[in-house]
Amino acid sequence: MRNYQKRDDYRDNYRRGRRNDHRDEPQVEVEEGQRFPLTIKKMGINGEGIGYYKRMAVFVPGALTGEEAVVEVTSISHRYLRAKVHRIRKASPYRVEPRDSYADQVGGFELEHLAYPQQLEFKRDIVRQSLERYHPYGFKDYDVRPTLGMADPYAYRNKAQFQVRQTADGTVQAGLYAERSHDLIDLPTCSVQMPVTMTVMRALVKMLQDLEVPIYDEEHNSGIVKTLVVRAAANTDDVQVTFITNSKKLPHKHQLLLRMADELPQVTSVMQNINPGKTSLVWGEETQHLAGEETITEKLGGLAFKLSARAFLQLNPAQTEVLYDQAKKALDLQPGQTVVDAYSGVGTIGLSLADVAAEVRGMDVIPEAVADANANAALNGITNAHYEVGTAEDLLPKWAVAGFRPDAIVVDPPRTGLDGHLMDTILAIHPQKLVYISCNPSTLAKDLDTLTDDYRVDYIQSVDMMPQTARCEAVVKLSQR
Image 1: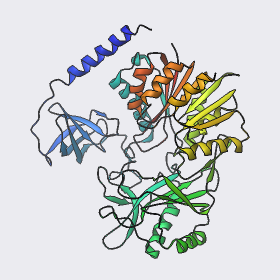
Image 2 (image 1 turned 90 degrees about the vertical axis):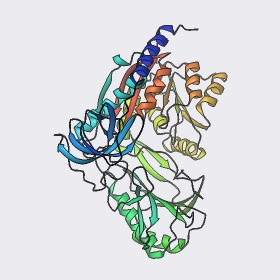
Image 3 (image 1 turned 180 degrees about the vertical axis):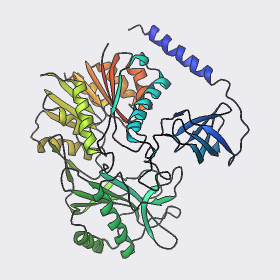
Image 4 (image 1 turned 90 degrees about the horizontal axis):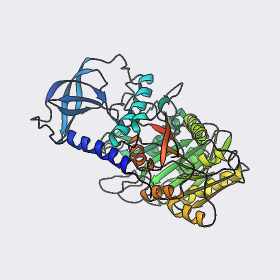
């Protein structure tokens, strides 16, 4: 057994200090609606400004580092306050006017008021903040590289997934929920969406209105259409529409499809996903084909990928190629080496490695995604890649028993980070090379706290996949100690 005592002592000392920092939290008498001046000292990982009122942290969405503002308290917690900007007394030189008038009302525009070069600096900094919070071994010496951004940080999102509701006067609206609520904000425009997605979205809203298709009522759990999803392929002319509904019924379906065929010729695939009842999940398990093709095709890095309605694909096609190039560079596969693509989705990462790997294997828990991945391998004439349904923590040991132990593993987990069983499996399989693609710096830092028992962090390369938001992706190169 390895002796990790030195590393454990290192962690314990940092954590002991962190606990002591919060032992005597200040108590402040303050009321909701109270206003006071505040200087913003830094920005938090969610893009909000952070200042201190009588030593208590105050989180202020829309405020920037260095700004002086009068803020109004909106909520009170034992350890912190939340507030909104009432008036800015001294603005940051990096403050810009957002293109979207509703940027301060809905999620996904947390940084649109910040100049883009400073957005990139912020995203590098939130990686550092996350490391500082969880203290993985040796974190102060990590090479955290400048964020790779876009030449034009707008019109990049290939999918619009908008909730649909009907107002008291019968007007059909489609948009996003206001922050911390289920109040729908109608979005007639959206600067970060590919224009075709908004053109199709607004046309669909008008059709639903004209045909009086029943719209879902969340309060009474009645009506049919819950959500509209429009996904466009940036490098082909394909567009897919999915109606997410409360039941299998879709009243006026025939008339709706006729109008779509006549007015929206750019739509090549129409699907219906059934997601009944009140649920926090947007998608249901059953998807039906309504018209056109069952999939759309996107091209990335010289490869073609067929995408079914529920298949995961990064929202920013241009930066996806940058991200995967960085992953390929970090893996640095040599002739004869094998790789496993965990959380493989439709195979975009693994298939991009097939030209250098001796063999690519991957897995996903969604059967449709695995079917898409194997179909995409065949579509591109790739014969050294194979995908199976299941979890990596189940399949990796099974493959090891059969004699397959990969030289490298690449993981691209959801925002919740790596499954604990998968981390144990990775440490047991102990591949020579490990690349972690993260969409959440906090869970990345937490996972690195475990992975650095056996691996060293060579570098972290952040990539801006979602400009105007506080979201940050990063490619981490890890090597055996």
